[in-house]
Image 1 (cartoon, rainbow, N blue to C red):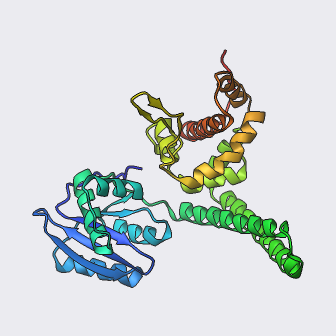
Image 2: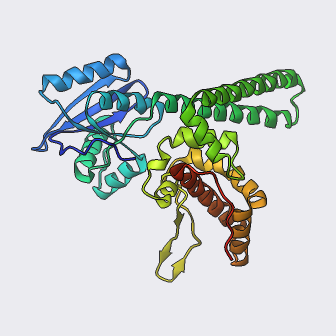
Image 3: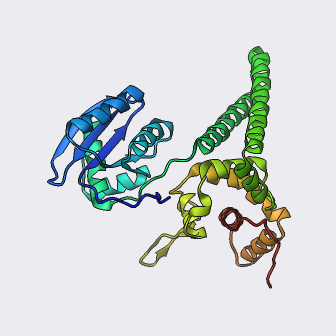
Length: 328
């Protein structure tokens, strides 16, 4: 998403390679010289970074770091709150830039240098952090997904042979996880009920046949500013739901999803798409058209996933519930 603040022509670019325990910085100035330092990945480390920049009389940077979830988000928020332009980019973009420059060295310092050069060359769009409420919703929905994955693992183990010695342990763990999931579901529901904006957005999303409370919470947690995207195509691209076709000479492979985007949303939309093909009149009719054109089952589901997300974008942007309109 594009930040409200206008992009400032940077004099300094800060490439940051974030790790679990520390992060490495490469500060590039207008003459392309580099200054490097590493800091603990913690609030004291963020403060040290701020002092390091101040000691070099750097009041504003365009900082760039890869999207690595919790390891990078706190640092990105800190830099944003202190007035810097921040870009949080897909790691695949950095990898492609590295390949284009024939970079061979792979170390933390070299990666920070690479990210700084990428920031200066590509001028990635500024990033805006989600609100505290949106971040909490994302944390809750991701925690629910993690618990669900653990429950499936335990249930699969219960179906395996030779588990009599550990059956009671597996069953206890499964029951515990079920209680945890139920508790998280209730916490998500209560939290969204207490926030007028989230409650309104949830009601709009759940007006779409196929989207229930879990899917709506995931969409709002992962794409808190979805209504601000330029178009439905941009929304689909963010989630990696755009089709990709490979064509070289006379060789043409069947199109499939690009998968360069938010995998959490793609995963969350799979079962709702299967449900929508049966119960959403608009998407059921559209899926039938695709089937008549010879599309395979997976292609149809992927197309419906994309259409569901675009419809979600439409109802949130217009602030009007979904209406069934089938054209001949």
